Length: 386
Ligand SMILES: Nc1nc2c(ncn2[C@@H]2O[C@H](COP(=O)(O)OP(=O)(O)OP(=O)(O)O)[C@@H](O)[C@H]2O)c(=O)[nH]1
Ligand SMILES: [Mg+2]
Image (cartoon, rainbow, N blue to C red; front, side, top):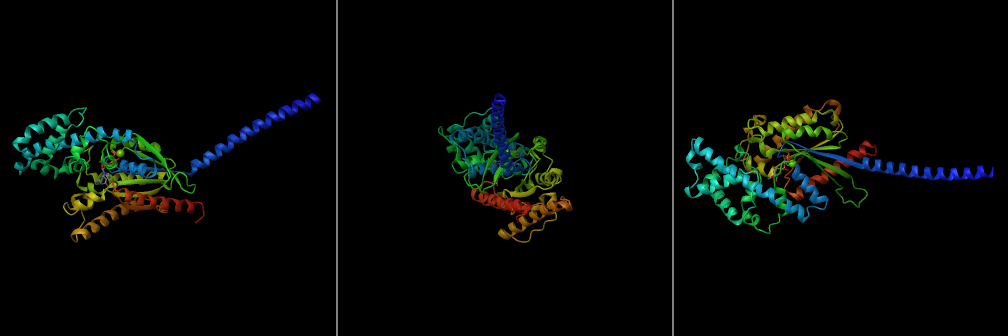
């Protein structure tokens, strides 16, 4: 009996320990599940070059530790590649225009610069680029300043010249970039263009990790070019909000992947497709009408109706007023598209439009604060607390 009792006691003790362990595991799982539930999943979607990764970089700078020196240095080769690719595009473009354009003479390089042009075009066509030296930087600067290259740059929309071209070529930047001790600045990194392949993610809390009340977000950045989009679908479950980036300055440009397709038309169709995804029935939509800085300059020179979607646009004014009018027109087109592509039973999902310039850190910070507030309010509403 005594033995039985003591054995029982032994079993009871073991049971109790096991129970305690199980309870601890369950408590941890519960905590983790709660924590996971607390994490809001955000997806950055949009066509290639719409600015998704630039927003992603800004979030890293604003709400995480930013870029350490090794990461900054990792951008040197990207930035040098941007420079070589740009100058090759412009050189080869000028040659083509000098042959095909009716006003061909303005695209002919000065005879002094022809040799430099051939050399840089050859380097720009290589699979691996050399590090930018002072001499090469000088050659690039000379060629960039050639009137034929400037005329060609004015037609950059036809040539897939990247948006970062002007920044890297101007303001003595080439000399700085070719310094042997060059470390890219935060601004250089934001301008650097590298096509995203695959999926990248970060987790952050906009009010700082130590504040318990702050939401925790997990933000995913994907490649926007056509062949990258098949990877998106794997991320579509349980998304709190889609941040859809549309580069509104690209209404007179064609796709990198397909020279016959207008970029804005592609964005329109892509936005429509994303809106109709069954997984996004309850997903909020934050539409970033991005590249406003380029848009506001372009719109006064290139009529909006260069794009088929905007062919009913009528300019009303000049200067600032005209910019506002054009912006409102574009915004309205996206709004119409949203309501057309949202079934009546889903109209209560949140839809907000923001005017953004992804390079502008203060603006991105302000915009994200608004996004955060909207999503928090939405959560309270869904929990019946509002
Ligand atoms: N001027 C200006 N440039 C911008 C803006 N947003 C992005 N860019 C630049 O546009 C280029 C493309 O931006 P990314 O952020 O790489 O575009 P993405 O959407 O990630 O492109 P994919 O990865 O190919 O899908 C980069 O050189 C950016 O610096 C903006 O608002 N204004
Ligand atoms: Mg990207």
